[in-house]
Amino acid sequence: MSAPVRARVTVPGSKSLTNRALLLAALAERPSTLFAPLRSRDTLLMAAALRALGVGLTDGEDGSWQVVPAPLRAPAEVDCGLAGTVMRFVPPAAVLAEGEVRFDGDPRARERPMGTVLDALRALGADVAGDRLPFVVRGKGGLPGGAVTIDASASSQFVSGLLLSGARYDQGVTVRHAGQPVPSLPHIAMTMDVLRSVGVAVDDTEPDTWRVEPGPIQGRDWHVEPDLSNAAPFLAAAAATAGRVTVPGWPASTTQAGDGFRDILTRFGCAVDLTGDGLTVTGPDRLSGVDIDLHDVGELTPTVAALAVLGTETSYLRGIAHLRGHETDRLAALVAEITGLGGDAEELADGLVIRPRRLHGGTWHAYADHRMATAGAIVGLVVPGIEVDDIASTTKTIPDFPGMWAAMIAGESAPGRP
Ligand SMILES: O=C(O)C1=C[C@@H](OP(=O)(O)O)[C@@H](O)[C@H](O)C1
Ligand SMILES: C=C(OP(=O)(O)O)C(=O)O
Image (cartoon, rainbow, N blue to C red; front, side, top):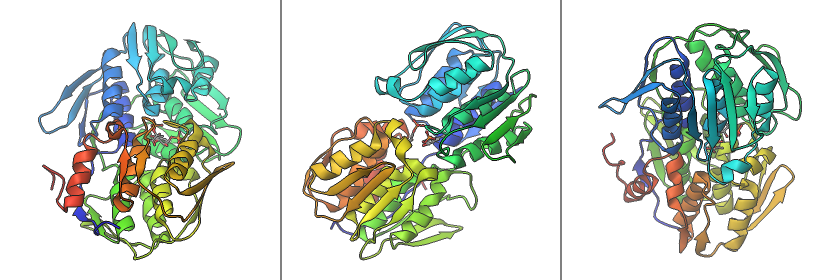
């Protein structure tokens, strides 16, 4: 094992909060300012999409973003990259423009599930050509809206996307889910919470039903919380090396699903301490195994799998069949990388089983997936000779992961940060 990691790591803003704030600011009645937003590939793509639709977006010297809403304009082209939040959140807004808005993205993005959102928009009165990327929204300057029933078992983003723009539809929107349970429900709760914060009337009292009333969206100041899911690999470094890592600015209460990592770390045997100073995690001498349902926090799976690989007991990660439609098929990718290095991992119908076995060095493939890349970095702290083939894929949600990781290992605060 490498030397225990001891560091204080300040992580950049939340992807999920930044992209929701950008979209709502674009649809608002008055300008908004985002303080400490995330600036990474996914949020820069969201910003570019909104600019292409005519929204004013300027950079403040302090790293903030000023957003000046304007009637959405077409024709326009939107590059979704590999960002689920761009491909699922922007089309429901693009129907408000008058004219063609063309969407495309990375090769893998063309495979990610999308048809449910486009069918829902058609059912609500939109003219959309296509069922996955590339597709074209032919905006009519507005949308009747109303009630729609969808199967959101492949992604909570199908629901969030429709809700975020719903207040701007003539009749608002009511989204009902029918199908296997919706994953990542905390992300839908976050959507409802941000809608309330901009004065939109919402109702989620009925299970699997979300209602957004039509009405104006207020401009506001947004103070974006640190991205707790992106904090996870750094906290995992403490867990993996019997070290200690503090993430300052961890919110006392939050709508981010990544907050669930505190409980997961406890189950691995870590000491987890949330104080006014931040969240401090101290790793145990021996990592336990876990049997855990990650349905609500699927995006933590690669990080949890990396710890499970280093655990001393068998781990079961459950409730995550939908990860097959993420940046890559994460279940297949994790099994391939773990077994490729001599480990023991197997796919379950809805998850993974990972048994303890000593790994050897070699290449850990990232599959253009930021969270696969960071999972490789965690394993590489403990197993000598591991090289992640595409660490640059981390720029999807962290601007400088290699710099932050190196600073953490050296025991420094990340450069330029408190
Ligand atoms: O709404 C959001 O910001 C997100 C919702 C989740 O998507 P799925 O429901 O597709 O897992 C999550 O995994 C993703 O990283 C971000
Ligand atoms: C699933 C993820 O991203 P996306 O927003 O592209 O769906 C993720 O970040 O783990």
